[in-house]
Image 1 (cartoon, one colour):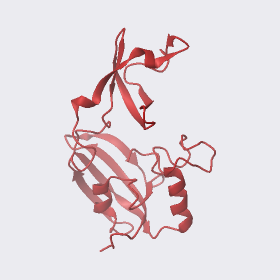
Image 2 (tube, one colour; image 1 turned 60 degrees about the vertical axis):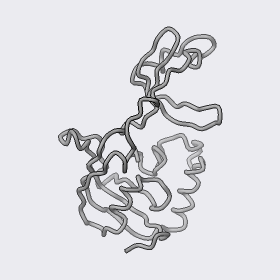
Image 3 (cartoon, helix red, strand yellow; image 1 turned 120 degrees about the vertical axis):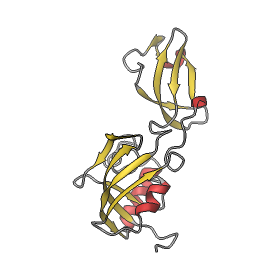
Image 4 (cartoon, helix red, strand yellow; image 1 turned 90 degrees about the horizontal axis):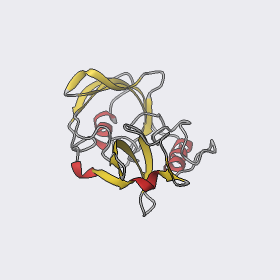
Length: 189
């Protein structure tokens, strides 16, 4: 069994399904573009990480994470009405980017950044869903371990730089160059 503080470099190939609709594929990380992360840094879902961290290269898995272990329940209080003026540029509403189902980067008064999906637009407000897109879903993961080893110091340092918003590609942490949603793979963990 792995020690609590030991870090592992993991590359995982998987297919992700909503357990309530197992015929509908949500996301896939094929073996030639696996989900890559270092355990213990909060990059992957904690329950997902615990299930696979001790598995060996080539080992297959098939498990379901309950919504409480994944992205939590859907919370209606996280669907909010924001003043339409917030979405104006030079006095004009941003019709090009703010439309129903658009996912927008937002920032609160404390400077915290997060994403929200537009669900409705009225003359005075924009209704935004701040729940994670997979909130309220039990998630079924099917896949295999592509690689499981000790991380190199350079890999740990690169992850730390990415998590702090730095990136060697000059993007300021906002590009899809080797880190997509911040996990190093472009997948939604």
